[in-house]
Length: 308
Image (cartoon, rainbow, N blue to C red; front, side, top):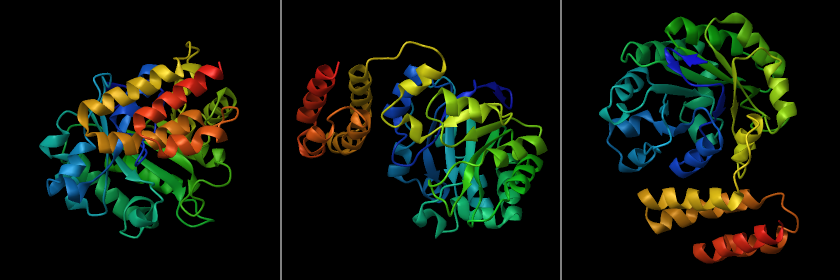
């Protein structure tokens, strides 16, 4: 599958705020993800040369195709952001119209834009006119509980020049509850000619095949990859990578770029995801969350070894 003229494969890792840092993206690529994407980047902060924003743009050597996600509600700010020199290394620019987080929505960004399809068109058009790089767009099916504007949004993005779409089959009101709407995803695929990626509830072969039954060109996995980068290996019929090997590599990559305080805070939540679902996990969760990071790693190592 291609985004514009760029080959990207068809099993993608979702950009997740507070999750998809460079270490996590590297281990997901190692396990088989075809394309990864940065956490979402605030266009205004980028235009104001924010150091914290630049940290989100660090990429892994494994990311042969680089994708960055930006968000904002002002077409001029967004157009300016795509020309920022910090984005020059990226091959694909993704625009977020789906984030349901209150602090994003209350600022008029993310899924709040689903209430104004014309504004979505203007943002995508402004970005497209400011760069030769392919633009992709990620959105939800609607804002309110009963909304479904996904077909209108899809057409607007395509008409404005987008090269690829990703739809999460839930409304903003649902957040991550309920069941993903496969019919809405199928409808989006039916009304546009550009590639469509299906997102939501993909955790195994069964859910993967259900998503493919909508006719989408590819899938995007978010929460299903938390603590489980091997989901990509599984879907590609590859041998899984030892979990402790993934953890150690994840930490090693983070330590390349960040101070120990950031690494510790980041890895504590990831370690809890890595061990989630394991037998007798409750016995060690508190220690993993509170001990020194190096101690927590050894606790996890011993625990996984004892679990075989």
